[in-house]
Amino acid sequence: MRKKLTNKGERDLKLINRAIETGDPKAYAELMKLYRDPLYFMIYEKISDQDVAKDLTIESLGKAFKKLHLYKPDFTFSTWLFTVARNHCIDYLRKKKLPTFSIDKMTVNDDGRKSNFYLESKDPNPEQILMKKQRVKILRRIVDQLKPKYRDLVKLRYFKEYSYEEVAAELDLPLGTVKAQLYRSREQLFKIMSGVKDNI
Image (cartoon, rainbow, N blue to C red; front, side, top):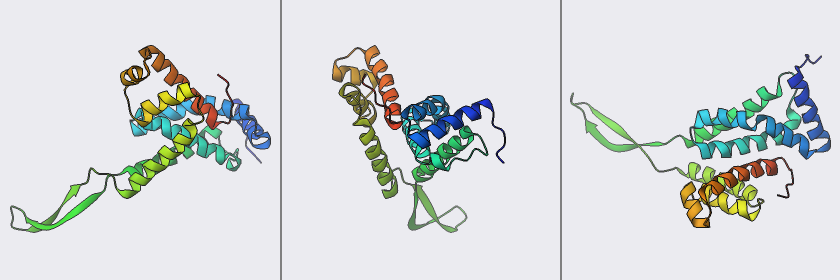
């Protein structure tokens, strides 16, 4: 027998059932609206990189929505969702860990003892390079669904890593417009992830 859910839990369960049973994009959009920002802040706290945190938030929501049928109301949806996101962050951080390599030459310390020494490599290893390429590939597929005015902004800001000022200069737009449209473009990305069509 399922334990009694809170009002919040019942609300989430109704949205989940609508999303699974009918594929209702509005149900996905509502779940995303409810949890997108809390997820982002949790991820950002672990990653300390705004751009990566935004990417991982989108990826975590995508993973969760694909596994939505696996959710069991034995515990709150938010707990389940945050677990999915947390595991995704752990995977990212584990793969991002810098490798070390040993130098075969033996060194002699002050006591006359011989030992190897290790240097930390600042270069990404093949796994890191592949992971970054895969993430960029996924994000590009999503970004390509944006309207052109948003697509160009996102590509300059996040793929070419332009500053806000550089984006404004490149597109000959006021800085305030660039910031506002980038905010709007992120909203569109989240809507695309939830299957919502927007004609703005």
